[in-house]
Image (cartoon, rainbow, N blue to C red; front, side):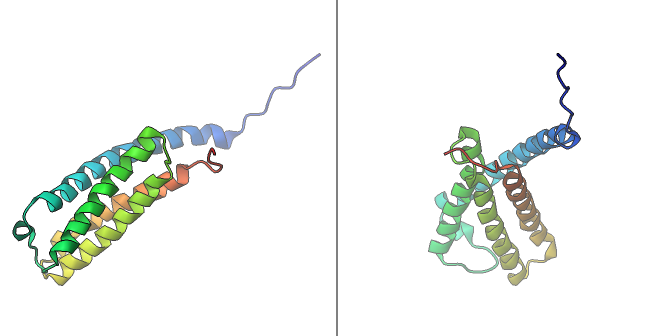
Length: 145
């Protein structure tokens, strides 16, 4: 009695190293972005509002709200995937941070500071968009119930 050898599926064999590499790159970007947003959000929550004045005058409550959103977004980049509790929240947190960074780019332009300083939130937003895309792409098709 002979058993048939299973035919190797090239796409899954070749895709595994790519998925692994993408996962490692995503974790590095996630950790760096999380540190940035936790720090920035924390500063917006603890510093006096006079120290947070930028090129455009924003209401103090709005600055505090952005601080809370950045802090929670930074935690949302790490904790769901790290603890394996609702990892689908990670791309949503990253997408929320993209929206915040779009606002930061607009505020920088409106403030007349220049294109040079708008690059920083722009690149940060692009990195958050990369995390949102990558984590959404690597998410399981059929999540466990």
